[in-house]
Length: 456
Ligand code: EPZ
Image (cartoon, rainbow, N blue to C red; front, side, top):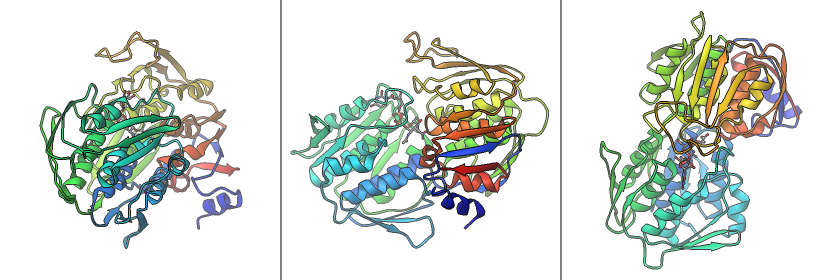
């Protein structure tokens, strides 16, 4: 056990999982090597996909994060046997005894996760019914599930609203459909994939999301026996099959975690090697990182991100669906932009309320103004609807330590970076949220030379 883990345990906090408040002494560069495991936003869906198999699945490079524990708990309440695989960091998922679960048990395990909505397709195929409680997720916008319900209805699911959630049934089974998404929603695309692969007949999905995590889920489904084609125009065609088998798969790396540590390297004048990172999934991020003044070196086993010296330069960023600049990448990078010489603009087009985290940065001395206008090349869904979804960051400003509270997962990591960057001491509370998506982040911070202590 590292000294940090020992401290954490003495402080009554499991490393990264229960730690509530960190006291961080900022102003030190983060330098060293960390290893990046499987992507939170793929691994959680791959675990759900195992429900579709008539035999056990093996998933490798599973990160030790609380979102994975949530899905493990939800699978187990449905009778799926989940155990450690032969390789460290792997899971064996055996769905042979899958059964219905009670809403109260689902709710107890779901916590703030939105993942239960993706159980519906597989459970309707296996059991003919599914229940989902009212869903949570980070408070970064409304997070509706209308696309999901619309899609499931198109496959023939009967949807019944209950006081505490939704009951679904498929008395006639599920039949392939021609579906067009109003927006390339990642979750709705996953919903279609997880339902169509075992539906009767063909499904055509237009306006699909094609994020790397979606493509890796398609790889998994194809290993199971599915027939899926992705066209260049975001149309995905699936031919339903009668039977799927378990898969053996090594998960795609977590590009959101890589981007977060890269932003930390830039903001703290550091030098971080992310083992397991790959260039193809990071192209849009690497271009922006270079334009801001960061430097990177692509190796066979990962990517080195470092501050090469000199001033950081302002940029104009517009988040978008893949292959654009990912919405989850902007929060950590904004901290580095507070140190850029000039005015940067971030137009957030995926979520309507994803700048809540900037309040803490302003409290620490950043000069950031939010606007409801679309300050970018395109007008997005949130223009003129009073959503403060464009940020103007003027720099350079020096951040000073402050007491701040983590608002959500990615905003929380930007709070860590801000405290590590600031001159002086900060107390960052509610850090447990960060363990939803960042494996052993306290140990990694220690490995990279951060100066902090854990309070209860
Ligand atoms: C996934 O969320 C990710 N989460 C998000 O990462 C990521 O930011 C997002 O995709 C976009 O890439 C997981 O995979 C668990 P969407 P998801 O459906 O699927 C609207 C993180 O920090 N919408 O693509 O929920 C929605 O409101 C998280 O790891 C509807 O209107 O995202 C949003 O404006 C944050 N109705 C837009 O679509 C619906 O039924 C994109 O949402 C569904 C979505």
